[in-house]
Length: 477
Image (tube, rainbow, N blue to C red):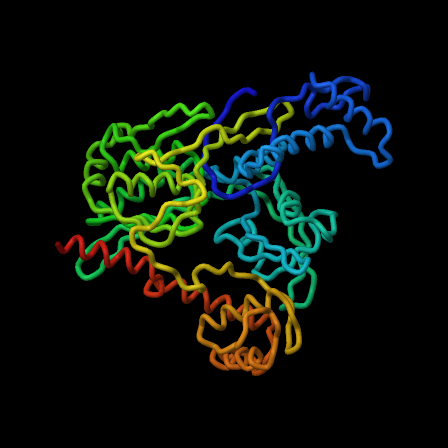
């Protein structure tokens, strides 16, 4: 193990792990009897499988299976073994940019569908469109691959080409594209100035705590303050976490110097308080420290997000609005292994400034506000056609969306009955699309667009509205 990083990430990426390194990990030996560890029983099983198993298994895969199995035994979903490729993908997920074609891809009913090309990215420039079905990548025809396997096929080095064959339903034909991979910027912070009833409020959304998040945060907060913001709304809804250093810098910009914002507890129970540090931009930070703050969170706010919300709450820096957060109270240390892979191991618990452990409990909101399902439901790209008498999970998804829009489906269990057919027909009529009662691609595309339009209107966001009202009232006092 050569170097390590500390991070807090709420999403479960992979299963597996390792407690110690195996000699020769990731390297094929010239003899099957060559020891791979200092534990005789491991060598015994390894050698027996190599010599006698009727199903051949590559040596590296056997070793990696052992590595994964070790942290399965720990029973901690956050302690994982990552192969070299998985480790690279994981680092990339928190990086300030990534190499690719710039398109979101999903898997639905065994098909690999383009959800949306990123504006200005290689995919959009080449001409890819939403609902294009990826049929081939290079010379490989897609069949039963996982979504991650398809993404890995598309990815590659910057400046290299990837050939893709897609089927475009609207044109009813196959089309071939050659796309040059490029750096795709990953922005983790967005901001805007809101003006409500004479009050100017800065709105800052954090989607993760990545490598560039602290710099993006400073730029965003500086801009809204220059524009006259007298209070700040911090939105960490759906933020799964990230690097501890990013949280430290953001907390330091909101809190006075030498304030304990989180406490680390190691495996032996030793406590180490982490305190905020002085920033180079004193004038900027002094103004930010003095204005009112509200943090908006939901059940998707995890780990590093919870460190920030717990600090804001315990230190009475602002109000928490939304719902109880995810509840992940452990810190993972990532260590490089000799085979190019990485070990991500939970090495510390983190406690709030008041030394409370929120693991499995979450950080409770000061003001609880539940959101409409139209905000919380994952939007699906559906290419199939369903009619009365069909039964499918995607029908259930459509029933939930229709019900949220006040169409009477009568049920949301995925069975397409007469009431559902009438609701579909009413929705189609209201949105002026072909007059029938089928859930087809036109219906699902229109339904998705209707939900996106609903989400795009800030007046429908109950949690954000509460945050705005809270700050406007506080500024008025």
